[in-house]
Image 1 (cartoon, rainbow, N blue to C red):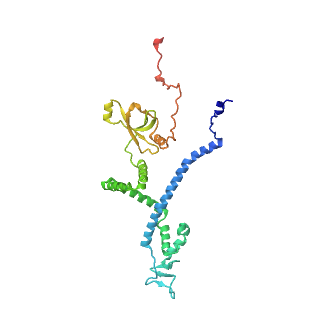
Image 2 (cartoon, helix red, strand yellow):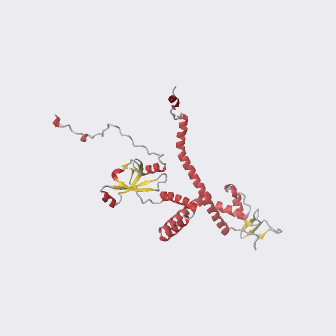
Image 3 (spheres, helix red, strand yellow):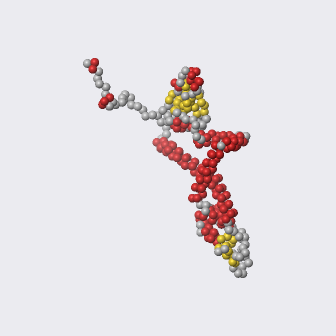
Amino acid sequence: MTIEEDTIEEPIVPKQRSGWQRAIWRGCSIIAPPLVTLLLLIWIASAVEQYVLLPLESAGRAILVWTTADIHAEPPAGAIVAEGEAEPDSFSFGGLTYVEAPMGGRYLPEYVVQWVDHRLDLLPQSMQNPLSATNYYHAYIKMRYMPRSFTIPLLLLVLLCVLFFVGRFLAAGVGRFFVTAFERLINQLPLVRNLYSSVKQVTDFVLSEREIEFTRVVAIEYPRVGIWSLGFVTSDSIHTLRNSLGEEMISVFVPTSPMPMTGFTVNLRKREAIDMELTVDQAIQFIVSCGVVCPAPPAPRVRGASPKLLPEEVVPPDQSAS
């Protein structure tokens, strides 16, 4: 055996997956997108509840307790107290019976205590042991006047109203001045400005009204000859450029991956662009996924097939051939 035969390396054969492995991977590819979407929605809902809904509920409940709570530190003048009790457990006043809270030595109406005691299992774990009169009122107002069936629609209504008035405010010159001043302040913070600019780019691309209308998807040789990039035709280019070159020109927006809201605007000859049989959404999916999500190819045409002619469209034979 020669030295050359010893140094020949065997070709590396890719390992083939078994049938059950392919089935598992196929199942993961089907289940993963809806599962990740569901988990993301649950995380967003949990974050909104934890950092928005609960603080607003607590603030609103504290305001209602502070303004409406009927709590007494001692029996008021004119109250009916049981005889012989220096420190009574209850008293009557104004047609209501007041009882002493288990802790704090303060009095509150008996109907509040009964309402809460009969519904303790409906309260959150942190509120199922109301010892003071204030805690009883917090639990009473939460269950009777601020259930989730009322607070969630109210929060959505308030949010829509805030968004509406903020949008109208920003449409005015004063609103734009405040937004510009706020962004100028944010851009001076080293770490926050990078995060804010990234989030703003995404939200502007998703939520803002797009003034640029993409007419069709094309492929152009960019950034050099031999490298093809997808782009969106936005207009027929600049009038002066078309007249100078004497050819039809187009303006093409070439987005970058994986953030298609940024990119480059190029002007090129119309004949140098290849029209793609893709929709704008398919092209954006291809760009965002960095080429992983490829659009499905169009249905193949059968070779040799000719369109069927209707009876009145049949071409008569050439009489001169005879």
